Every structure is written in C-alpha cells, then in structure tokens.
Length: 416
Image 1 (tube, helix red, strand yellow):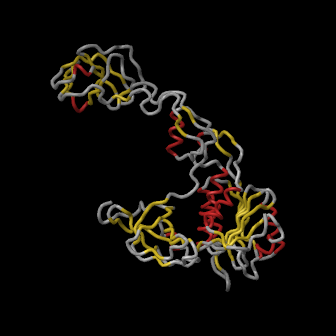
Image 2: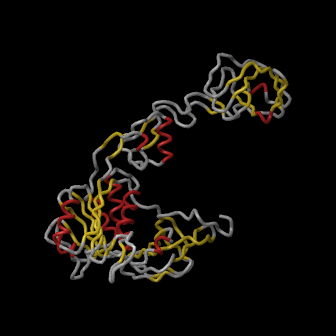
Image 3: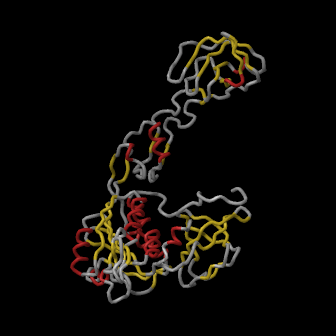
C-alpha cells in the first residue's frame, strides 16, 4: 500500500477502501450458551415444527367449537390434561377436557374455552359466553414450520435469536470465528485511568477503556497492549506483539506533529497508508497492514477515536465476521436548532433526541462539540450527519442521525 499523505478522501471512499481490504474469517461451531453476539456462517433451516403439535394458549377446557357457539352450553368433563402430559381420550359431542396452557390438544377438540368464561359444577362445565371455533389454539408450526429458513447467513445473534435456535434444537450454531484485536494508546502524557492523581502535564487515558468497550460490543477477542510511550523502540515492540493478532488498533500519533511517533515508526512500512479524511472530528487516520494483521491508526482525541472507530474499524470487524448489517441504523430527524458546520467535511454532530415534532424525533446538540469533549458523546443518542457540501442545517430542517443509543431512559411530555 502506498504512502498516502495526498488528497483528502471523502468518507465514503475511505470506508470503501477499508472494507475492500477485509476478508472473512474461518468458520466454527460454538455451544448455544456462547452464541450471543456471534454471526451465522450459513442459513439456519428448521428441522421440526415450533410448536411441534397443536397446544392450548391458555388454561381452560378443550372442546369442539360447534358445542360452544352459543352461551349456556353444558358439557361433561371427561379428563384433566396438565402441561407436559398427553391423553388417549377423545373429545366427543357435548364433552370437554380440562387443559392447562401449553398442553397438547386432545383428539376431537379444536377450541379452548378459557377458565374465566366457564362455571364448573361437579363433573360438568357451563360455558357462559359464545366462543369461536379455533379460539386459544396454537397450531403446529404456527411459529416455525419444518424447512423454514429461520435465520439467514450473516445474522448477528441477539438473545432472542439464541432463544429461537434453542426451540428448533440448534445446540451448536455454525458461526464465523471472532477476530483477535490488539489495542493500545500512545503518548507520554497518558496515565492509567485508575491513577489517584495526575503529574503536571499528564492526562488519564480514556481511549483504551472506551476502545475495550467498543471492541467487545462487536463480539471480538481483545488483547490490551496498554499505554505505549512516545518511544520508537517501545512502539515497535508493541506493534510487533500486536501483529500476531488479526487486527491492531492504536490511538494517537497519526497526525502531522513532530512528536507523532506512531507515524514516524510506520512510515517505514509501505503497507500502512496515512490519510486525511474529509470528516470532523477524526480527519487524520492510518490504515493498512502490519505483518498479516490489519492496522487501524486512530487519532488521539477521544471523540475522534469514537468517530473513526465507528466509521471504519467497527464495520470492518463486523464484515470479517460475516455480518450483513455493518453500519449503525440511521433515522430521519428534525433539527431542534441550527447546525453550522464546515461544508468541506462530513461533520458528526453529537445530538440527543429531546422530543418529537409531527411524529419525527427532534434532535439538539448534546453539549460542546470539540474533539476532546467526550462527555457530550456520553450524553448523545447519535451523530447528526451534516454531509460534505451542506455546511448548515437550519432549525426545523430534516437531518440524518446515525443512532448508537436509543433514548429509552427519558420520558416525553406528550407521553411518547
């Protein structure tokens, strides 16, 4: 890969170049207990019906629908059928079997009358209101039918997906291997976040803890290389160790400064390219290979780390694992204030949803927008994308918002 300090790349071009360099990892089977967050390597087809047989949707009485079309029907109770049991008894005209939720429907019955709509007197039951045929019966295969493609290859498994896999007997789904990602922060000014105090000129390292969380959210295995000082030998040693992973992610040292040691070390490797990307924040960015490992060199400011990880590293890591959906969901919102930005760049404005206008979410800045102000990212629900060539979004105008969090913890005055 050629050294690339030339023209400024548009966001879409830079991301496409990154993704074109990413291949799929190997495939493996994992126990269902470890499947959450993994990505399916093939379609999952049902080998059996769910439910496997018609069953009752509620506690009540299994009956023939023709016998309960009118209120006041009196039926003979010929049995009791709890969940997990079956019966050889067949429901005939004028008969009923007491049944619990989930129990298989007995032969002859096609309807369940709920307990609340009955009155029991000894061995007989009176139906107190008319009931339609088929009420409260779950048909065999009503959820999943044999030979249904339940989930397509590339599906990232949520807890609900895992539950469905369990119901169809897939105990060891076939998934892509998790990438092994080595990550580090660089800079003499950094001190561990747990440090009780700060030396003059020092700051706590927020990038590594944030990166760890971002990486874990993508389902990868992580290797923490720690804080690497602005020392050529130390950085070379860390990069050599990181190159044994599938991916290396570093923060800091990729800009134009005299002390950007990461850039100085990697400029000797023709397989790493230093870019200027037309985005704000996170304009400086490095991408390429160190040995066989993919390398992402992110800027040093924490919000720049967040933006560049979200736009480049996260989609690449998901693609490596075979995911179909690799970008955050986007919604159309209404600007609750004017967003003035640089028209030469795609600008990621940290915003939160503060209400609704005519059924459309309204967004406002979540705080200060400087690239070092991470607190406004923590307060945000997403990035309002003011695309290159736009410059200004007026109050009340529509804007695309890339959501990384949904505003589930707030209540709106209008009850939404």
